[in-house]
Length: 203
Image (cartoon, rainbow, N blue to C red):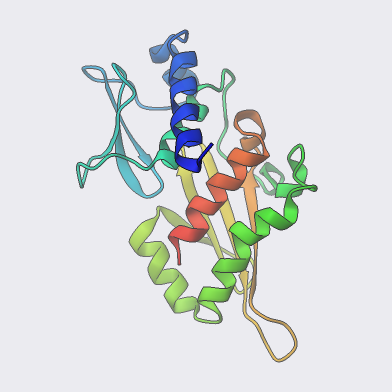
């Protein structure tokens, strides 16, 4: 099965399962905007997305183009969560990828999809990193590492990027923290896709 076929099937399966859900109630539970005329407008990955509850179509409101399959999967899987998800408030509200079920086993593939390509591309150019964040995501600075950023993913899910400059002994590196609510919503695969969506979006 090709990647595209697998993504299409994941979207179909998620939308079929959501057909059994009271979506207006689910939107309220997850703190998402209410639908107006069958359309939900929400911020995700630095863009305004439009989700049509009639057929699951998702569009970027600015461009009018369909959202990527990965973004659709992440949002539909978020809507499948049947418990409230809180936004992070305290330092204890953050976890690492290792803290997810199976995360320790998949850590190296996770880093290869996220932190490593970002550090290799950005190097010590923190001004470029900040510029890319400004252009592509909703975020705010945090006092961590040489450059820390709290980045909005979707709903109440955030990532914290902790970036460290390289020197003569060590190359540039970054750590990624997830808001702890991710454990209520995603398994390791979806959490990795969420982090990859943001890290690769900064390249």
